[in-house]
Image (cartoon, rainbow, N blue to C red):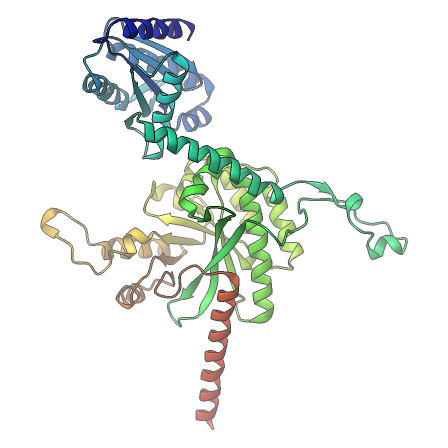
Length: 478
């Protein structure tokens, strides 16, 4: 690294003396290296880094420099280039070289990289800002899908500053709801057993006081039975009501929460708040089976050792049966942590908690893992549902989206799972799903995600209509 910094400072001085001299700094970060490291071991991970370094050197010209910054990050200095086109030509060569498999200890490993490019200019007086801008461009490449490169421009710096400010605001917003362990016996009021002289049951609680005021709110989207058009439950979706920016879209802050680990505290708060709400609805609108709530769990949440204990306490606090809680996980959760996740899922299923694979069809969609995990439900991604009924240009080799949905439904039923179709927006899609014997649906055709008051009104209207229908049936039977 030190040699690379010296070379970079030398290039800067040369560029200041010669106006025709251009160079570029590449900041390269391996995509999903942690998955390789965790699944194949650190020895293979180290061998992979050595193999990557050799491949990088093979792609560079005489006089170019490559250095490993640490972890899975590399910095490359391209000296005396003709312009940005030459830099991108070299980067494309790097991408091609990286995509071919690497054989390590009899194991084929596939890896890609995200690369940021910063081109020399008169504005750079030192190496620090050049490295910073190349790093910023690299993160932009990751945001846009990985396995690609981006050239730094000034708008990226403004974007990075905005993200940093948003992260700071997110930390402040989450801090009051942060998940903390405390000793219940020391911090709570004496219980009846204590005042009567009985020895209390001593245990730790993972449930801090549930705050009434928060910058976060939960919107609930109904999940409807296709057979009878009744609301059977809701998906809980978090929203951030920023005091200055207003409502921040989930796609702007959830990724930040994931990257920083803040998703753990936020996710636990959503889980607890949603369970509290569904219990309230169950008492107001009793049904058989009772209303359920679906909550999304991230990869990071699944790595928390006290997750099961936390869920147990939430269910106990709200007097909820495990069947009332449905946990939605993405395919990546199953693939990346298969052994530990399997044990966790078995524990959850033992509590009768329903497990749902979210956005099925958009990730790995490997049939090999479906039978290995104790899941109850597949949730078909909206990208398939939205194209159902749209005429397909068979001549172009396209596959009818309705047939894809049919295959997923059939697969699910063969594995003993039911199906939820998300993103239903019109009656024709609902009719097709009914014909395919899909059990449940959600989407704007029924309702967009709404706050708890509006969701309560939807349930009240459903109860009123049901009562009217029951009265009519009773009258007709006499």
